[in-house]
Each structure stands twice: as structure tokens, then as C-alpha cells.
Image 1 (cartoon, helix red, strand yellow):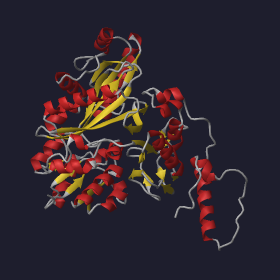
Image 2 (cartoon, one colour; image 1 turned 90 degrees about the horizontal axis):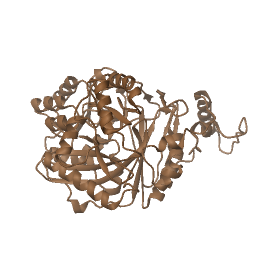
Image 3 (cartoon, one colour; image 1 turned 60 degrees about the vertical axis):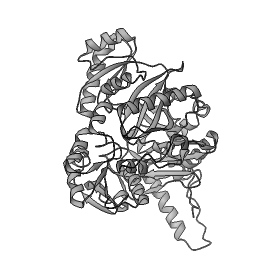
Length: 502
């Protein structure tokens, strides 16, 4: 199966490490690429070989398809796994791989064009009988046309970038007076983020739950779903916490979403892994939102409840193998939750917080998984996404999973950059989250973090130095604290330190 196969990982950070580990378990050599800031990144050392592609900005490195393909040719790579983000949903890159004789792990260029962009995806899903959110039939060229669509479907509406995702270019518009300014702002943001100013209009689904169905297809008509994930904990339309299964989903609705997904994917002749995202309204109706033609950040919760490896499955399908599982093999057990730990300041508008990680100790313990691409002493670079790590836990029940996640986040030690661990614990402690009844408005409703003492980097550095002094002191030496009260480390992280880790 793996003879003469070599996979170049066209990504960085935690997802690059994730793919490299899957390759190693399959016995396949892996090749990392790196920009100048990533020369000593963990994923670079993990791979069997590495090619430096230079540059610092994404456009100069991981988004430069010519450099990525040249790297693949230079080491004789036969496959490219794009991870997520960067070139993972670029049909032109897929075509360039095909022309170069390098197998791209993912769907065809035509499938990406039809499904990665929201407008053709809406049309394809509607044709397959999947309900879509009422809205414009295509791009709206100006604010006046957008207003007319809104008058037809009903205010308020959402302006969305046709080529986008992650909340960029998206704005809620309450009434006609706000449309001109919102339209221009969304156009500018969409152009900057995606290189296209194209917008369309959708009706607002009231108090929706954001639910997505993972699937795998072999391109020959065989398709399986791998259950659903609920991704309703969002800040500015960006996912923060995900879980599987959805604790608030009606069983009949769940099956209807599965069948709609399988029907649509089968009709498209799709190949590889993908996810169909839906909005579920309070009345129990579901509406197609978008489709992701790649691995998703939150895939770990699906792996946890099903005991599968989605990345290995992607590679096997790309090698021409049949689907690794039958539908009846995919039976979920227990509950899994994932938290995205980011270098952001939750007490200051979640602004990015680049810097050196002079302390980084992720949690350990049973049924705790940490996917990360950073390490203690490394640099959190301002050129890339703020994601430091994904913490995924599994429990026999949802309450057990929540308790385990609270324990894991409490053990996580990060020093040198601001981070969102206090915010994540704030969400987990909320009544709505614990009840499993939350929707996409949860973060707004629970409000900002309570005020807290802010500790300077220097204070935490002093705490680390004190700890080092204690470790080097002769046995039996007593070192008294210089001041009463919580330690600088406890105040900085909001959790007790785990000095006694063996």
C-alpha cells in the first residue's frame, strides 16, 4: 500500500504535526515545509525530512503554490496533504498538483469550485433537496439590490462573503438604513480576506444552533457519515468550543440531517473527507449553511467518540483504497469536547498576543488529548493564526467530559503571552452550556469575563525564577514567600501550578 509513497505536508503548526503522526503510523515518509519563522518549529523536527520555502508572511510561504510544488518535486513527494486553511480549498492548487503528477489529498478541483464557495454550494445543495436559508439567488452587486432581497426575505438579514468563511466579511443588518454602510464594510473585509468582494444575502435564522455532519466518500459512490458536532460556542462567528454528539439535537432531526448529507454527497460524486454545516432553528428545522471540502479544526471530537483516525482515512482514500468503515461500524460512545486555546487577551477585546513562551505545560491525564504546534521557549509569531493548542477530552457521559475539561484547562500553564484559558473556563461554567441548551448567542448572553487581577510578564518570570531557585536548593531548605497571597503564577494563569508533575 505505502510502497514509494511520500507525503509532503503543505501546512504548519498543530495540523502539520497531526498529519505527520498519521503518516508515521501508516509507515509513510513525511516531508515538512517551513517558512523562515518556523525553521525550528516542532512540526519541522517531527517530519522525516524538511524543505525550507523561506518568507515570513503566508503569501510568501504557505500560500505560495509554486514554492510548495517545487518543494514536493525536490524531495520526490508523491502526495500532498494540505491540512486546513492555506491551500486546502484552492482548486487552482489542486489542478497544479494534478499537472505535476502529485496526488492531492482531497476532492477534485471541480468539486472544490462547486462546494467551497458559498453560492455554488447553495445551488448544489438546493438541487439535491437539502433545505437552504432563504436569500439571494446569487451575488448582490450593490447595497440597493441587497436591500431589495432583504425586503423579500424579511429583516434582519446577514451579509456574507461568497468566497469566505470564519466570520470574515459577515455582518448582520437590522434594517434598510444600515445596509449601505454594512455593505461597503463587508465588501472591503471580503476583498482583504479572500481577494474577492463578492457578497450575498441570507435571512437571519433566529437563535440557531450550529451543527455540522462529518462524512467520508471514496469518489465511487460509497459514502458514510461520522455523526454530528455542535459548534455553537462562537465569538464573532468564529468557533471556540465544539462537542460531539450534540446534546440538544432531537433524534429524528439528527437522522434527517444525516440522510440529507448522504443524499447530497452521493449526488456530487465527492471524494475524500468533508463536512456539511447546518443552522438548526428553535422550531427544529435545519438549513444548509456551508460545506467544507477539507479536514476541519474540530475533527478530534469526532475521532474521540468514534475511535477513528480521519487523517489516515483521508490518505487511504487518496491512495485509491475503499472506505475504511461501513456505516454500521460507526457507533458513537460517550461525549467529547474540544477547546481552542489561543494567544489572545480576553480582558482586552481578544487582541492577538504574540511573544515568547517562557512557560508552556499542556495538561496530561487519562482521556485528554492536546494537539499543538508550539513548545516552551518557542515564539508565538504574529504572522499566523493565534491558535496555540486544541484540548480534546472524552467522557463516558457529558457531565464527566465537562468535568474532565475543567480539570485539563486548570492544569494548562502558559507564560509569556496572554491566552484565553480564563474565557474558556467562563463558558464551561455557564448554566446554558452545562445544560446543553445553548445556541450561537451564548457568548453574548453570558457576558464578558469578570474583572481579574492582571499580572505582568515580569511578575510571572519572577515566579518561574523563584521556582528554579527552589528546585536547585539543597534538600530540606525552606524558602519563605516574599509576600502573602496567591502566587504570581496562580494569579497569571487563573489556576494552581502543577509543580509536582512527575
